[in-house]
Image (cartoon, rainbow, N blue to C red; front, top):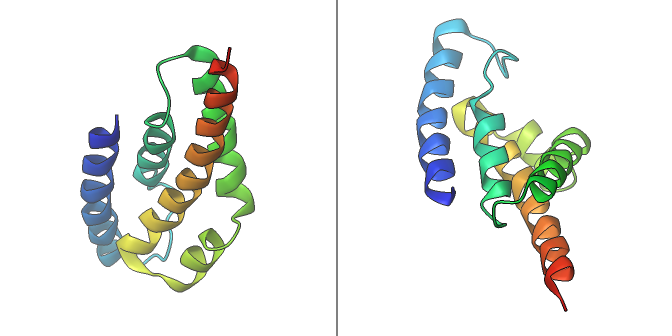
Length: 109
């Protein structure tokens, strides 16, 4: 899952940069590859478990919506394809950290 997220992020960076250059838009809502890469990054932190996957989805959305530092900084200061991808990947790191801690807690005897 981590490799898939990395490949998706790199291809997404290129595709988002191309789309932004072609359309002249700043952060187009129709570009969703950043969400995919971010969600996969969160899920890479845990074993395959439906309950953890659901929690990972919720955590990623929370951090993507509320944008704690440095997610908000990346969203506002970094432009182009990198900016489109970076804020979601940073939000994913928050989600992955919390999800890893939850998984550790659940797996304790």
